[in-house]
Amino acid sequence: MKTKRLVMMGILSSMALVIFVAEAQIPVIIPIPGIKLGLANVITLVSMSLLGRRDAACILAVRVTLGSVFTGSASAFIFSAAGGVLAYAAMALTIRRFPEKMLWVVSILGAVAHIAGQLAAALYITAAPGIFYYGLILIPAAIVTGAFTGLCAGYLIRPLRRLLDNR
Amino acid sequence: MSGKAHFWIILFAALLIVCAAAFLVLSNRGFGGTVAKIYSGGELIDAVDLRSVAVAYEIVVETEMGVNTILVEPGQISVRSADCPDQLCVRQAPVSDSVVPIVCLPHRLVISVEG
Image (cartoon, rainbow over all chains, first blue to last red):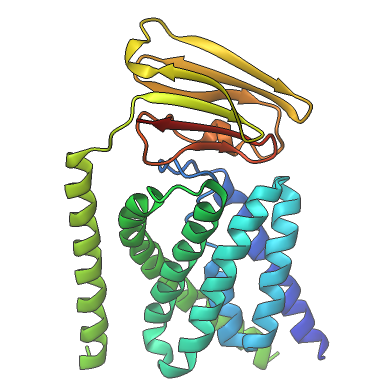
């Protein structure tokens, strides 16, 4: 693997981890333990766009494992793994079908899948079907954060791609 | 803007509105439950009727897995502090109905409002 690509993967992984740890400090008003906004998916989307789906999967694995090491919680691992994997799957399946201008659609689909993954994990842990009630307001939240991360991904991809290709 | 983008914008906007509306409707109807039951390691160790709480007090649950300090207030219950590594139970909002329980996974503590 080219050194430049490896370095880019390292940079993207650390960006994902910083976003993950910072986002873990944001208190979400929903009384579901471990729920997160899913902002780190911007990196999954950017790496999928820049480096391809396989390397994006590696970066996701790094974010999920080291992220739960840094935040010190095995429960958080379950939530971020479930959310991250489902978001990855949704984005991996749809990214090829959309031109880069419409990446925000992929991002929103990923964000919704991320929330669905977290709800599934919460359901597994608490076995409370009342979780779906909170899912009803989390889906609009996911649509909004997905649009936001899609926008951010758009701004990130162009300069990073120039870095990767030219110099 | 192309027709394709229009389609997705309308789809997501509609989904957003439908979910938010459903959430508001369910919020107004409310969920039942007044008795908070505390389970440690799967066993019921305490039950409190939140309606009959006049003055806030604390329940300390100490097991070989760790300590949780539960705050019982008129109408709601929450975990005030705990020595678990993730602190998810502490950061979780207080519960007052049966929608979701408070869970401390490392300490196998579940606070569930029922009936």
